Image: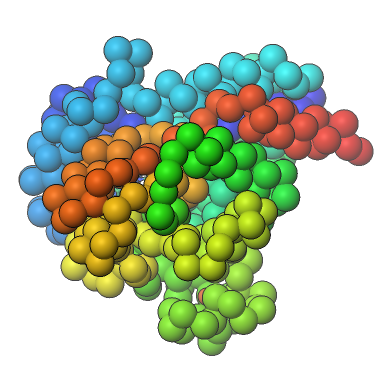
Length: 339
Ligand SMILES: C=CC1=C(C)c2cc3[nH]c(cc4nc(cc5[nH]c(cc1n2)c(C)c5CCC(=O)O)C(CCC(=O)O)=C4C)c(C)c3C=C
Ligand SMILES: [Fe+2]
Ligand SMILES: [Fe+2]
């Protein structure tokens, strides 16, 4: 029997700094998130980050937390519910870190007789810290606990015409309500090193602004290329004028160089250069979360206005939009009815 496991990143159990600390500990000790040798990673995460960050992050989570819980989890559950109603196979939801765990999600499917699982990482673009770590954990869990389960993985859908249509619609619906000068596509950042590590050719990636536009089989695993492609395809679909939209990267952590340009500096510079009205969309996320609701809708808005900007419009993620639910359900049913 076939079934589906939707997987998102995860959130702390609550905004209590203790819960935030245990969530961040699991997340940041993942070698595909902080990709340092074990000893160095332990010193950095347990010796430094976990002594300071949880308090600060807990404060940020408190600003966006809903009565029902973490927005990321609540929105993922809504998506799961709606897709469940549209499709013919059981749909479980799991988080890569924290609860509901991937092990429980697989158990839930297995208990219903499922042995063929469609694994759906809820990330449009490939990254070591997202798609890859989900696949690796799924395989480990299969080897250890579910030897009868076979996986099919939904590939990154950053350039899938159906996804680009949904994302474009979600953007234009907001843009039609406002007057704006510039549309910024802000993606979660990753350290530049992650991009080089994922380069299967070991020679293509230069992070010089041009490699991502030069065709290469490296792009199958290049987060930077895939982000720029999402922006380009939406720009094309919505017939956006050259110069009225651009791409930036947010949420950097630590002192290593991350993908540039950085969103906070971009927003600041735009305001200082006289751009008065911007809209910001965050297509690295399917579900709104801390990084969109706090870092963009609150922090970036504040930076923009402190530097002379007047209107800041945050465009929500595709979350549980009807057309996204229909699209995802169609992809699932196509797979469920195949073979
Ligand atoms: C595209 C998705 C994501 C990538 C790539 C990613 C990489 C990445 N993230 C960190 C560090 C942190 N991320 C945090 C929160 C967070 N990150 C993502 C997505 C990606 N991360 C999401 C959806 C969220 C929000 C979760 C929520 O509960 O709402 C945090 C915690 C918050 C904070 O303290 O700022 C950290 C830390 C690294 C190091 C990294 C490396 C590639
Ligand atoms: Fe992150
Ligand atoms: Fe590239």
